[in-house]
Image 1 (cartoon, rainbow, N blue to C red):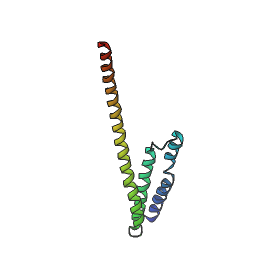
Image 2: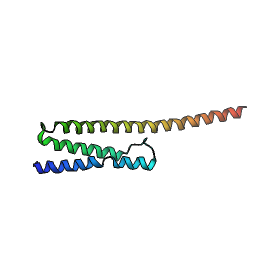
Image 3: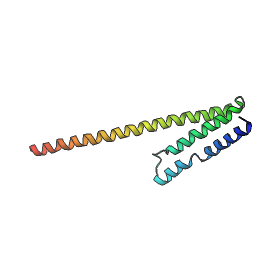
Image 4: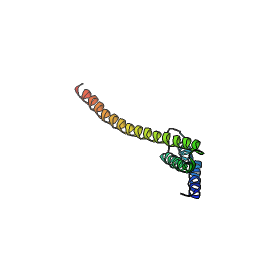
Length: 116
């Protein structure tokens, strides 16, 4: 690739890096809570970090700080996504478990009322 190509890849990455907080800001303002994390925020974070890493590969020795910071950002964002997906899966299982137990408790209470 030419240095111009690296320049434009870096520019796109920098722009995405600059706007990465907008989806999270929108969700936070709209829901008035910080409990939720926008998945689009995390996806933009990963894409921008990867583009900046590619841009930094033009001159590895000169751009080691960019490789470390953007590589780390990408890695930790990926971990955050995996944790969120795991929690969402656990949350669905927990809701199902609660519903199943709720029915069992209601049936037990109903049978107790019928026997008394």
